[in-house]
Length: 104
Image 1 (tube, rainbow, N blue to C red):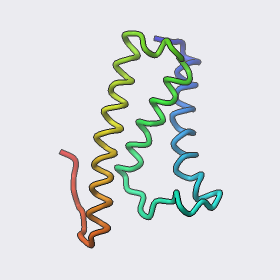
Image 2 (cartoon, rainbow, N blue to C red; image 1 turned 60 degrees about the horizontal axis):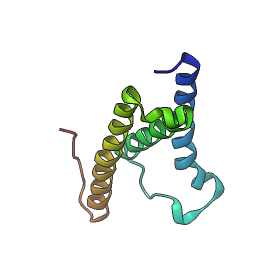
Image 3 (cartoon, rainbow, N blue to C red; image 1 turned 120 degrees about the vertical axis):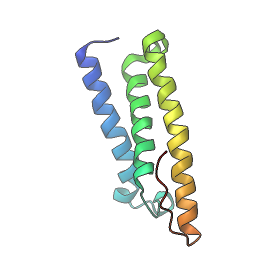
């Protein structure tokens, strides 16, 4: 499953990658990539992206072995589910409706 130093590397990558992807366009002034509203669902989907990136970067091809592949599949499911919920929430908010959806 990996050593503690590898999991620390995963945690660091899981924090820095989403932070740079979310805040990078704002910092560098790339207006076309800035989202108008950052919702909690948007952040949760990026946490799953960061975890997927961190595991893949740290473990390389060993990430496709049995214990780690379950985490990767869970990350992909989390990315899809929370990404769709964030997209729907943002679309409802842009239509003028106040979207107060709670997770089931």
